Length: 235
Image 1 (cartoon, one colour):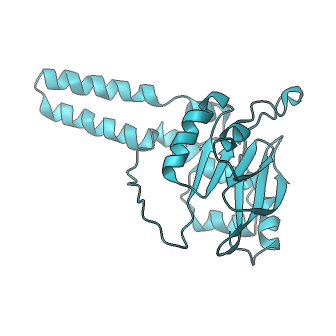
Image 2: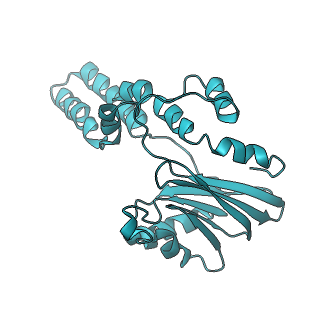
Image 3: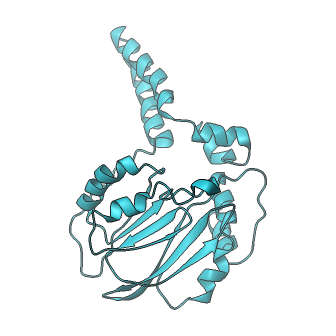
């Protein structure tokens, strides 16, 4: 699975399906084998399966250790991002978690239903979360929302594939204007052309990036011009 995700990614329907399939069950086999080996006092085999279990946790489940540093300097901004999967029922619990992180900016994907078109606008998770942050500012484009404790000076929407959009806002922070982009792009099947310009250079700089990430970067080619158009505002 790790090889499929890193070397094939979403360039075929089968590999994309495997990548999106829940990864939790792949940890059952090494866990059971480790327990069985311990019961039989085969410690080397138990250690081998333990290593496989750690690899599963790191490579497939994305386990990382990021101790939260609550100390912040005067120029630090904290940004959090969530794919909320149109679950309005998560709004209360997620708002509590977000508040504990003390962010300045919240980016949400799948915050509003956009498809099918007759149901567009339903399940507005962003609006439900905003009710827990009075005085905050919010903009929405497609199924993506940005909430900010700072005033939003301007906002733009960049059309991507199908109903997907990239929300591009400029905030008025105490340290000057700041651009924030939040995007939600589609699964990419088939070969993707390589482009010149900002994102083409990025792909060359990171030749070992995951294939899925490369295919997704190809989708946001329209942002190349948008980013180059305003190079003076920090991003």
